[in-house]
Length: 94
Image 1 (cartoon, helix red, strand yellow):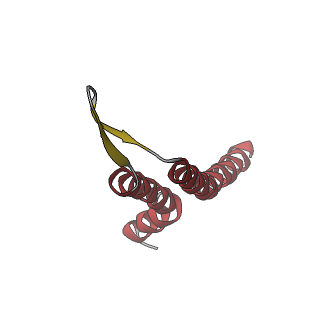
Image 2 (tube, helix red, strand yellow):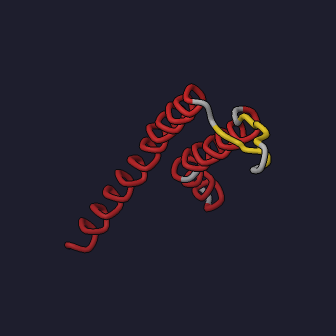
Image 3 (cartoon, rainbow, N blue to C red):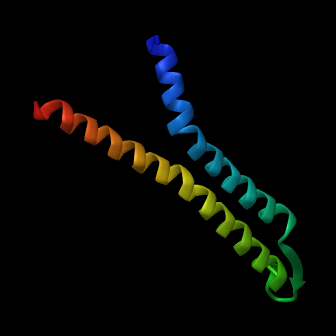
C-alpha cells in the first residue's frame, strides 16, 4: 500500500467520523439559532430572544443524540491507540 493510500485510509477511519459529528453539531446549533428562537418586543427592554420549553427540550434531545454519536469515534480512537501501543510494546520487548 502506498503512503498516500495509507494516509487516506487512516484519515477516513480516524478523523472523518469525528469531523462528521462536529459538523452535525454546528448544523444543529445554527438551525436552532435561526429557526427555533422566538422574539418579542418588550417596552423599555427592546427585542428579547428566548426559547420556549418545547424547543429547549428539543435542543437538549438533539444535543444528547450528538453526544452519543460523538462517543463512537472517540471510542474507536481510544481502541486504535491501545492496539497501537500494544504493537509497540510487543515489537520492543524482543
